[in-house]
Amino acid sequence: MTIGTEYLKIVRERFRKVKGLGDKALQQLSGGDIHWTLNETSNSVAVIVKHLSGNMTSRWTDFLTSDGEKSDRNRDQEFINTVSSKQDMMSIWEKGWTTVLETLDALDEADLLKTVTVRGESHTVIDAIERQLAHYAYHVGQIVFAGKQLKDEAWETLSIPKGKSEEYLQQILKRHQD
Image 1 (spheres, rainbow, N blue to C red):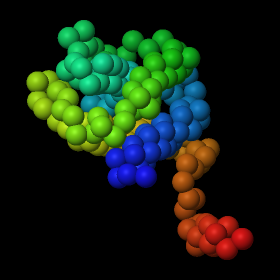
Image 2 (image 1 turned 90 degrees about the horizontal axis):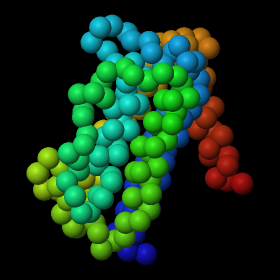
Image 3 (image 1 turned 90 degrees about the vertical axis):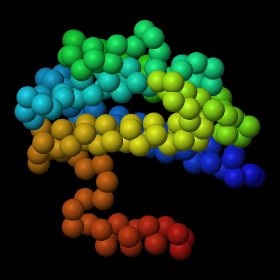
Image 4 (image 1 turned 135 degrees about the vertical axis):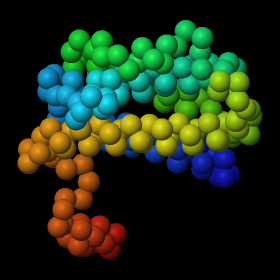
């Protein structure tokens, strides 16, 4: 195994984990919940999903051969809530993630040091991958935060429950001993 193939394996897993975290958060939200905003300057979950998908589709379509900011993308429109239902939102979510994951799966080690452009600015493929991973994790964190605010005590935690860190650690250690 080379460092390039290991890196690709790791980032593919990381993107899938970020998507999985978002999937679990979105499952807990109702059709009405997805339109909630904390205040006038906040985005609803539906808008965050619409923006993420727009970014994903733009950045990852023809990833190695065209600028990541496609001419047909209207970023400002992504922040206007036109999502009609949770089902519509989930279709938008899956479209973006499918584009990302299929493109990542098609990359190989030789692609990592190639140059891609976003808004005319050059980046190595590694840099472009890292920027997008951070961007998507940031927005999925916003989705989780919104879900926690909406569901309060009914929220099913997506990580180690409060006050259960030691118990969780002991379970992990026991698994590794068996």
